[in-house]
Image (tube, rainbow, N blue to C red):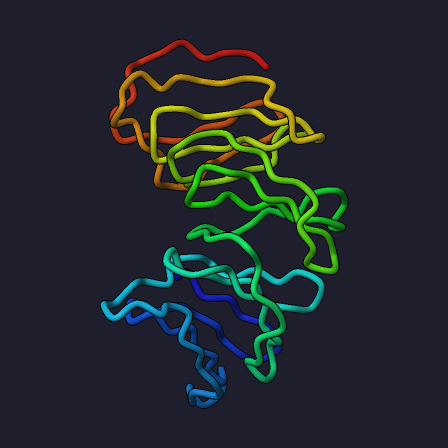
Length: 191
């Protein structure tokens, strides 16, 4: 995973299913947790995120974990699987995650799920804040624009069943850009 640096420590997921905390000064392992219960290596690809003073991270074959940063102790397991980082919404009071089952899962500061929205049968591949809502891409051929209430406002067909979006989106106040694996050329649209 992309590492997270916090308070003199580096946190990162690895291809063997472990999530590890290192000291930045010495590079020493301070603690490690196995996130993947599988017998074969299942990568921890999710970029860890900090929310309400805890680390949220997961592997595609087990539920997302809420971990105490200093000790590595499991605080809670959330009831969804994801391989991508969540996104803070509502002025940092809530988070939204995209699941491997094509759902958006909304949690509050107490790590309680309060909403679930089914978007697709394909895994969610990325989330980005944009124009007061969230743009959601999948490993299928559809991208979505979701409003602040979790309602689908627009769907964008990327042209091919193999138009998966695996990368990150770039955005500013007016424009949004991402690259899919097989998108047909299309004119830009105004939202």
